[in-house]
Image 1 (tube, rainbow, N blue to C red):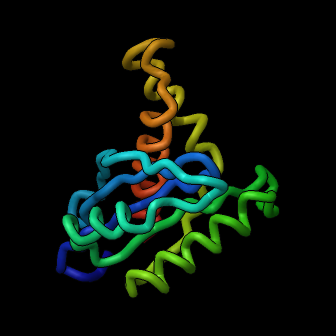
Image 2: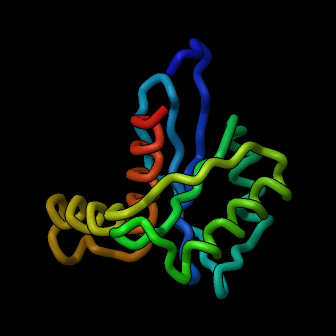
Length: 141
């Protein structure tokens, strides 16, 4: 990164039933899982997200963009874009999309290596996926 200012960035791993969330700092390029928001058909409780954004005061947001391995879109791709647009519209923060191919697989492998099969709880997978999305975004910026 060329800027010397530290940016706080929040990332989301969009899903139709749950949306993982992580926070990170541009100066370290690392992320930590925050929480997982329940969603109904891809629609979260916007007040909960608003409260989280108020607490963390991020400079920008990143949303994982689910793509097929060949880079083409899938049914969830357009919905993730719509979620990103809604975040921008509701909270007036810049939002960038980050290719998230393999993050869920990586998250499951990471959790499994730390805690075995019992550790593979869905909310953990979603927030770790959000961490991986954010860390890969930092690597590209």
